[in-house]
Length: 183
Image (cartoon, rainbow, N blue to C red):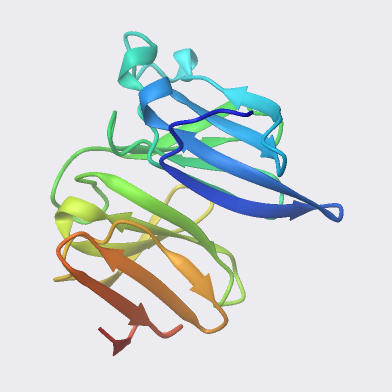
């Protein structure tokens, strides 16, 4: 039996094999698992980031992976930064940080890779700021996609649509232009 207490996960195919990437906030790590649950690796808190006194501060909510294998971790229960690691799990940078203004987070909770625009972008659920945002893969804020949501907690992209479960009793569906098509 593999790791328990998974908060969010993403299934990703790599060379014809599917893997589970999962955030484990209470265990202060991100893991990559085989579908059987057997661990491939774990990603502990990045000491070299300077954001944490110890592992206890790292409480990742979600994880996604870019086409080049870069790993993005939403540390919404910890630092409120999105952390970027390279394909070898080496810390690259942190971006965002706590705040209410655009480009800052109040619980960066759900995260996903959005390829619907052609150029891959990170789609981040800025839960307690009640908005969803685009960030580029270098960690630059691009734009708010939709605001005045009800605590968007996660994102699932299916075809031309992005689906956001909201903690305050609603689901919002956006088209690839960011327009609300259903609630």
